[in-house]
Length: 110
Length: 115
Image (cartoon, rainbow over all chains, first blue to last red; front, side):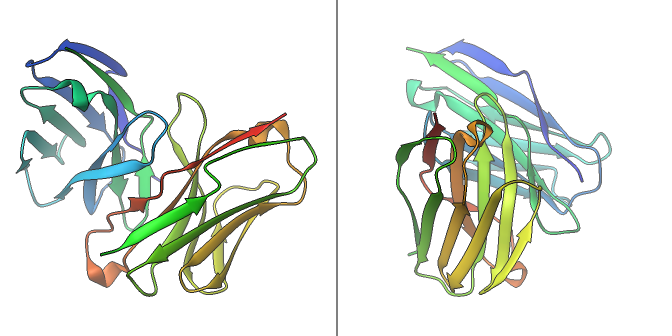
């Protein structure tokens, strides 16, 4: 089964900068999703991009999907201290179940 | 609106003791239900999922079990805990496939420390 793999694993940026995370997967997908997890909390769904979409926006979030390269990126623009969290990508394949990556820790320094 | 609750939020259990984590969903019917485990610094591992009452699928062999006695209730259990069972356990739900998207909604998690 496919698994998202985020890259880089940890990112530390100054408030106001943009943060970019990448995710790769191995098999064909129906959609790809990004989740955020604040320390010690449950995961919160951020955005879903379908396999026939190439880019999607939600507020300060921008997600791209390149199915030919089997990769996705999450861009957070004008980061805030509250964006400090771990970010996970997850893929949905033919079995309709999510496979999560290991997460990408982002620290935004005020 | 839909909500998901799981409890307890934290617990410390001795090796060999039983475990029961409970999860309920409100505001929806016939949800798909999931139990995930997250070890420190690692991703999420799907333990069990259920598409209906009494229907449980196990993803990994282990000494944990799950039950779904009611449509919106999902229980994670163990008869005898191992040290390796320590971790962060997350209950989650999603709509059926026809509802589209397969977005999963998570509870706040339960921290289990086996000592």
